[in-house]
Figure 1 (cartoon, rainbow, N blue to C red):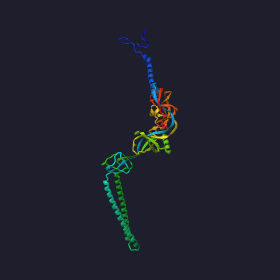
Figure 2 (figure 1 turned 90 degrees about the vertical axis):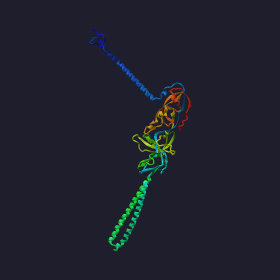
Figure 3 (figure 1 turned 60 degrees about the vertical axis):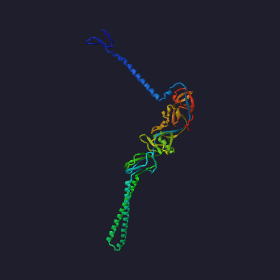
Figure 4 (figure 1 turned 180 degrees about the horizontal axis):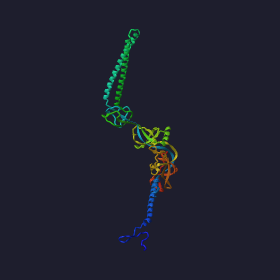
Length: 446
């Protein structure tokens, strides 16, 4: 009997009811599984394309610059590029510190009788800052001076007795030679002379001991007067009058802030150039502080560490800044700029023209915390708009170092090119523009 079921099915018989059942078609999985695999592959490929597009966008000019926001005419201000002189400057981060700093501590134990200064007070060298009670020391000193007077009297008495014995001995010695004095009498005088000489030596040693005791107590008495070791300011006061102190306990902290110091780290790549500049007499630096962002302070490099730190391959450099008015405070954060030379007759572009701002393009001149490869910042890429036939054209150029206002153009631009310096962040590539003003005063160019 021919089976009514296709060959891909199997016939089964229920042993109880005698009915036949059609089993599951297993060929469905074999025919449709490849299509599911292809769908998964296509989804993964799409995700990879989206990821690559996102990465390429992060390295390209801003989206508003690649695509014209609209085709309406936008007003911009431009600056024609010209040549000039630019100074190569390296910048480092540093922190101000005091020229001198000392913790004023007690040198003897006792009770603080008075403290004459408070935090922020200006003091002069030798000025008394605090006083430890000296009542007991003065009593001990009086006792020691009395003992010294006794020792001095003992020396005088011993000297007189020695002179007397020596005189008697010298008078009877010639008589002994003439047999007018016995040998026993001469021997007794000689023994008495030696004993008196020893007594005189002892009295003189006791005198030196008494003098030393007086000197020690006078020194300790001087320690009760705590004086300023230099001109400066009181940074902090730890104790109040009435406190009991022991030797070595800190009472005040004193700092000298005129001049003030700034310390910064210079990497191995630049330390040679800075040393060369110092040998040529180029020691002046400029310092800008977060506390006074609109001012630049002048300082002088005073010393350079003779070794590089193995942890970061950098050397410590110190500079001094005059601070007669006390405006500069230790702990302030600052940026040090040091000139490494100038380049003349180079094409300059205002940093104002660069898209996203000069900071986003990392064009601030070689600023480093220490051994960073600051001199590798000499070649960089910038994006800006130039005006050609009343349209904004997105342009890429290669830049060298900058002075904070202008950057050296190495390639991609020519002298006389009009670059957009105001309104560029609203432009798209190919936008029609109208020029409302020209900025041509390169005040930073010497």
